[in-house]
Picture 1 (cartoon, rainbow, N blue to C red):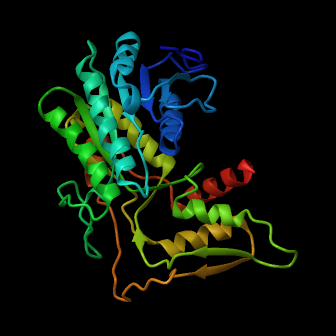
Picture 2 (cartoon, helix red, strand yellow; picture 1 turned 180 degrees about the horizontal axis):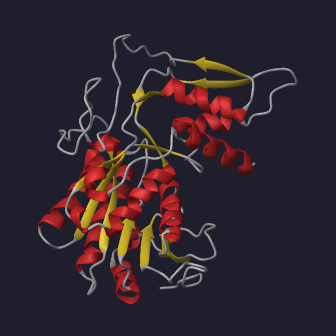
Picture 3 (cartoon, rainbow, N blue to C red; picture 1 turned 120 degrees about the vertical axis):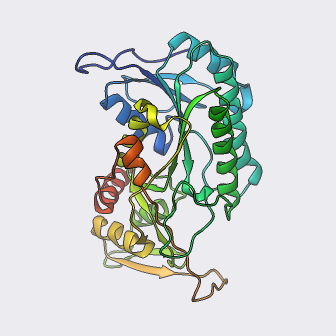
Length: 327
């Protein structure tokens, strides 16, 4: 096991409040979670399959749980004795069911096996998804007791991972909490996401005097979008709050926005002249097809003392500024 980086959080008042292992720390949510944990006074031990640029104050440990098995993570936890492990690893939307099952189910099983073999029990904060729930009609909020029959292979793979964590907690093997995140947006958003695709197209250089063309599938759905910084503050709270042990807690904004509204705000943040084209790609969805999602965040307030504080305008602005800097 090879750790790269420095121990300690330079300038943290009163010293560190404990190490935290962040699995998937080089990914979109993992980076934000690590930053929030460090700001809260924790030492961050970043774990990912491949080295990537991380803050100099983080330690980095290359590790592939799916390929190499749980032994290396067991050794890391026994050696470093973290107060928490945050599982921000996994596979987002993929065309391959097998890849999603590996990243969202098998990886979690390996993580739980690693924790079973340790002599030290940290809090496990597992990041699930609201896509684990059965889609609900417009106006019906997703609560922690909503039915879990996902309508997608992605949601099914995430649900299997979350269920494994909850079983482990119920059996007393793991001190765990599952956070089901809604649609997270902010700086560093994956390029394959809807807003990531929009940002990439906005960065194009059209002919002088011509608008930028942004081409998307029809924008018909409404979603609960949560700012990445807000979601990361929920992660910090979940590492510390004993009341959430063994529970599922939904993390979202508590509001539903039409995706066209969010796309328009990103276009406005770019300041660019845009021609937006919605292309069905040859498929037709019924005009009455309702695709709506909103999350009830009551449990997050009660169990974590957490509420969303930032609006979509701030998240979209962060997203665009980071996209500009990337080029």
